[in-house]
Amino acid sequence: MKKILFVSILLSTLMFPQQRWIRVNQLGYLPKSIKVAVLLTKDDYEAVTFQVCNAKTNQIVFSSSEIKAYGKFAAFEKGYRLDFSALEEEGEYYIKIERDKSPVFKIAKDVYKGTADFLLNYMRQQRCGYNPFLKDSCHTHDGFIIYHPTLDSTFIDVRGGWHDASDYLQYVTTSATATFQMLFAYQQNPESFGDLFDAYGNEGPNGMPDILDEAKWGLDWLVRMNPGNEMMFNQIADDRDHALYDLPTVDKIDYGKGPGLGRPVYYCTGKPQGVFKYKNRATGIASIAGKFASSFALGSDLLKGFYPEFSKLLNKKAIEAYEYGRKNPGVCQTAPCKGPYFYEEDNYVDDMELAAAQLFKITGKKKYLTDAVIYGKDETVTPWMGKDTARHYQWYPFLNLGHYIIANEKKDNAKEFTANLKKGLEKIQNRGKSNPFLIGIPFIWCSNNLISAAITQADLYNELTDDKTFIEMEAALCDWLFGCNPWGTSMIVGLPANGDSPLDTHSGFTLNNRYQIPGGLVDGPVYTTIYNKLIGLTLHSDDEYKDFQSSFIVYHDDYGDYSTNEPTMDGTAGLIYYLSAMEAEGKK
Image (cartoon, rainbow, N blue to C red; front, side, top):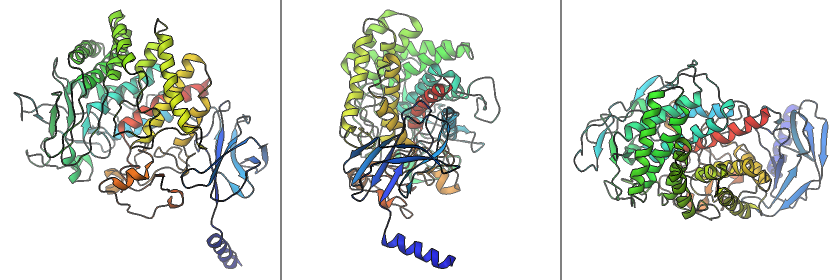
């Protein structure tokens, strides 16, 4: 009888493949938050009503016809937003429409508890020098200087920091940004962080929040990369590193000094660099100097109670770095080598604005606030907002926290800079209002980083103004990261623990040792046109999401797809603020 039933179900599935899917935030929802699921269909089904059921009893606890219909999106003919915000009782639930059910999800005050700290697992795993995940050290011979007019080929000690992504290159561009964002997250929501690890990332408390331990790891490296006034380095290694794909502790790339015996350290010249065929388009120093300065300035403020002498050093270096940037406007891009890919950052006034605004906060000197306002007026909206596309990291960081700092000072220009934050959000909202996910970001490489930036800006804007204009979009974009998307998967490895999240990431940890990389935010979906043009992409297993791919956007949980399934250090760090804010909101 069981065999007959199984064959019957199999034939039914083959003859009548699934046509409808209900997507939810698999992490869950705060009781007072906006709660919207998305029904996706490949047929002409008209959704009229839906039910929310208790996952333990299967009893209907909520029924509604609060449904908004949308047209074709990605692989689907129709989409519907199913609003159940009125359900506030804590519990475990699923949504049902006729025979179709969603995954089980929670409504609870603590759904975000520990999530910000969880992302630090990935940051620790990305550590260079001593790596606490592997309990071993890597790249201990870094490195030798290149592009310096008198010190070329000489040794400089730049151990430490984080590997940028699943290769082992290191950039000040992303590392300084990640450092500032972690410091900012702690400054805004200190109660969301615990102390379970020591300064080296090993288990065991040390009397200092883990988020600050991680940020200091970044600051220590940034100091090594800025060893003297007007002496800055912005990159270790280049894409020659891609020749091997292994754990960092056995990385034996030979850059001419012998296998594993040192990597090139790029001196900031403010001019185009690239040792082989491809060159960047560098025009100055300010983009990198501003990043140094803002991280040093905020670090000096938050670490003075833990490391007073180090705090004084950071204060001094913040001022020096800022002044160097003022004297050398322009962008200091990362350098390509054998391939054409690099971080094509084209803006720098946002970096100098943030640095000046942060220096004003720690010094009280009005000249810095004046400078910050001038820089901020040159770029009122982060340029990717409202765009259909952009080059890789063309406008970076993806979030301008300088606008928020100026607006939060409640001084003469606060209203103008609050309005600037609103303009960027309006551009994203207008692009997304016609699709069921309300997603208005361009699906360029690292699209999830843009989502993280957008929800952070929306949350900060709401905090400044109590204006609820963007709260549904903010909730929808957060939901996207946790499974309310065409593929029904979370974009953070291992979060939630019982949900669908990436398993086969583009990482040497995963490929060689089947180590998982918990807490890593993967790049996220890209336009199919981008995917089809990238070099070296090959899927290595059957695509479990093939029914959800389209000529518009794709995402693959496959280590062969570095464009959508590679976690990034700066993307992960950038999401920490928002999760810490949601945990704090739940506690309220």
